[in-house]
Image (cartoon, rainbow, N blue to C red):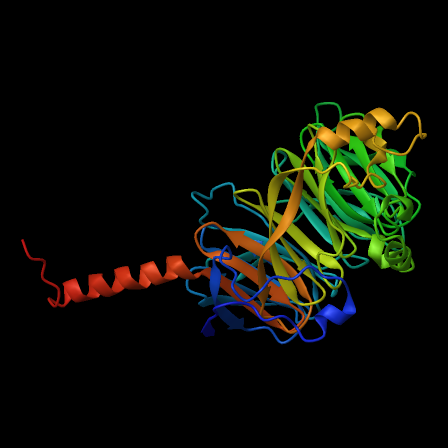
Length: 459
C-alpha cells in the first residue's frame, strides 16, 4: 500500500493532439483530493467495487478473487477465494438479522457458472450454487420478498437458503445484460435489443409454488441495450449502442419519450468535427445514466449530458468530457458529478448556473422527444426565443485525477473517506481529501503527545 501526496494532476502527454479535450491546469484549487493511497491485491483487471457499510468496500475482477478493504485506512481486511474464473457480477446481500451493517453478506457470480454467498465479517463462503447452464451476468435482490434473482440465458429466482424457487425458459444466447426492480413484484430485463417485463408470483392458498411470468416484451430499441436505470418512482430509462434513449413509464411500461439521433451535426457549432465523431458508433453509445432529484445525467460516448426534469430540456453538456469512452458516472453533493473513462482519468465536474447568451445554441438533437426538437422552422421560433432568455448551466471541470495507467472501470464515493477507483492496471486507488487528512493527522499527534505527557496546556 503506497500513500502519495499530490499538488496537482499532470496532463497526459499527447492528450491535446488526440481530441479537443477540455483540460485543467496544475493548480486545482477546487479539487479536494490531493492525497492518494495505492492498494495492491489483484493481479488482473478490477471491474467491480461495492460498498458494504460506512467504512468497508469490496473489489472484484477478472482474477476471480474478492477483496474486502477498509476505506479509511486502505487496509486489506479479507481476501475471498472460491471462484476459478472472472467475476461477472457482485451485489450486497444484507441479512435479515443484520444490525447497523453488521453480518453483511455479498453475492458474487462468475464465468465459472457459480454463485457464492460470502460472509464479509469472516471471509468464509456461506453457500454456493453450481447448477447454472450459462454464465450469470447480473444479480439483483428483491428485499421486500427476501429473494434474489440471477440473469444469464434464463432468469432464476432464489431464496436466502439458495433454493431455486422458479426459473424461465431459455431467453437468448446473448443473455440478460441488466436487471432492475420495478413496482408490483416486477423486474425489467435487458436482453439484446429487447426489454422483457417479468412478474414474480408469490405462493398463495390456491397456488403453493413460486412462479415467474413473462408479462410483456418491448421491441422499440434498434440495437443492443447498454444501460438500464430507475430514474424515480414514475419512470425508468434505457440507452442503446447506437445512441437511442427511451424513457418508460414504470407502471404501465409505455414509452414516454424516444430519441434515435443523438448527434445531429446541423445543430452543432463545429459541424465537421461532429460528422467526424459520428463515424464511430462508440461515440454515440449511451453507457450509463445517473440522476439526482433535479437532473438526469447521461454518459454518451466520450461526452456528458445533463437533462433537467423540471425544465424538460438539456441544460448542460460536455461533448468531449474525456479522451475515450466514459465508463461510469455518479453524482456527489454540492451539484458535482464524477466520471471515469477508458483513457485512465477520473474527472470531477460542477454544475453551475449561467445566463445563456442568445448566440449560444442549446443541444436539442438528443432530447427533441421532450419538445425541443426541430419540428419546422416556423414552429421552432417560440422555442428559440424561450431558450435565449432561459437560465442554462455549464459543466465546469474542477478536478482531474491522474493516477491509473489504464482504463478506470468504476468508482465509489464515501462521504467521510474519499473516492475509490479501480482499473485495468490491476490497482485500486483511494483518493483522499488532503485538508481533512492533514487535520486528522494533527489531531492524532496532539492526542499522542497528551497521552505521553508531552503536551501541557497553560492556564
